[in-house]
Length: 170
Length: 162
View 1 (spheres, chains in turn purple, yellow):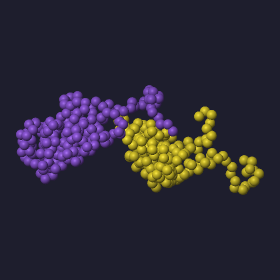
View 2 (spheres, chains in turn blue, purple; view 1 turned 90 degrees about the horizontal axis):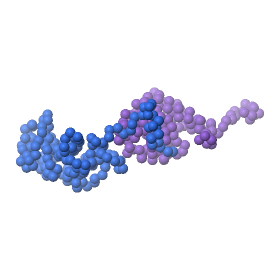
View 3 (cartoon, one colour; view 1 turned 90 degrees about the vertical axis):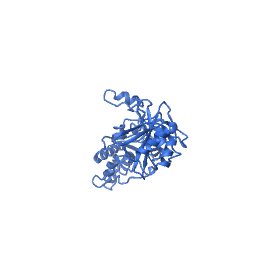
View 4 (tube, helix red, strand yellow; view 1 turned 180 degrees about the vertical axis):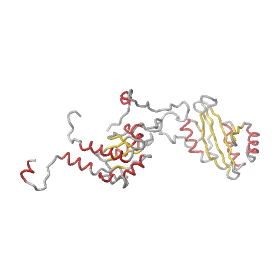
């Protein structure tokens, strides 16, 4: 672990009691959804993590439970270090408190996570879809979302599919 | 025929209205710029001096749907773009034609997923499909020539079997 990161992780563990994982120098700190806003505020104000460089999520269904990890990647430009916070959440409509109060840039990223994973962000000022059309169903980056959209047309099923295809009228 | 024989060589040609109008339409077809992806690069080079689509009366690419009569959909159309495509098509004055350029515009191509429309024929009526990923400029010009053949066969009065 980066020498500058060690005291920060120790502070986090003393305050929130979570665990951390390290992989090739990257530190992932696991934290509960209820504590995330406090942890982000602490890191921003006390430890110079002034940039939320990425906010994303992973769906580990069906291997692990809780299935979603919401990931906050924080950068400190002053100290040249990065730290990842991971929030495991479960369920069909997982809920995490919004980070928009701490980092303004979380606004669109949380909308993207809502759109792609269906993760609700409590207290988000503008919870709409951002990438998909407003009337679309489902959340495409969930692992249980179907992969293909249309059955490929071959010679043996050409006509079946052609009949079902919604051709445009004039 | 009869008029020409009676009047002699006076520089008069008789023909049908259909063929004159269709000839005029094919020789001044103004495509609308609708470059969406990598096919647009091939569409641009089809316009450039090496391939030179203006040999066939297509030197003008219009950026406005109201001034164009041919829509070349060059590239993949996302589901969010589909209403925009239809709206632009509706704004084009009659008569109008659509060329689906490339595999993505024709059938979705390699993008068999939630984000991409599986062929623009779900949104607008397509006259000519040009295959290729992307099609070479020659293929696009061939597609336009194929459309010309179709336009030249247009009948103003609908036939019985239609």
